Image (tube, rainbow, N blue to C red; front, side, top):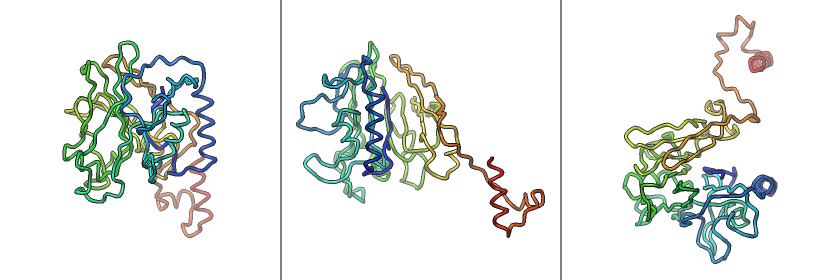
Length: 302
């Protein structure tokens, strides 16, 4: 199966062209006759309650031939918005209802809340998607993007509750997908990487663009964090110049391994600091002659 930690779309309301290409790609690569041997044990963490009769995961729908199940949480760019009979919706809800992906990890929050005291009294209740293949049991927890101040408050107040499987509690591999700031942009504008419960085995961290895909053990917690990063360069930041990867995650009982796969079709991105005054004499530059300076800078990137 394929896991996405948010921001499949760059915009909350993707264009028709973007939706078309996404749907076409999912149909081409995910719908086929390849057997899926993953059994759904519990679906509490999937999507939103609805009155329809189709199965909670697409590969259990007899009307669909799903060979590669996609499980995705939402990010800060494609989060649920609006009001209606089904509550706030996003583009992932459309893909999920069409049977192309399995959208999970959404939390019903008061989107307009600006202060801690306006938060829901019960805090955050994270329910897992329970999957099993052979004797390996996977409890997959998803937390789609939440306002960082709200998440930080809930974590500091110990108001994040994670439901545990009722049976074989110690035999489940607990996987968490999040889409939040990992780097601190202020005292409350990030999620501390050591703030998750000791029951977690591995965290897949979305949102951050730097590729830090090698699992990092968090001291004193016992779990690991892998940060795949963005698949394309979307900002002029040094972290975008790091070689980009996806990973193949293998889980066996309570053990895991992650094999980084370098992406070969990424547009080259070079980030460097150049002090023109240090090159002025060697390159025979005059800093007030802009066309020559531009040509020189271009030559450095070739």
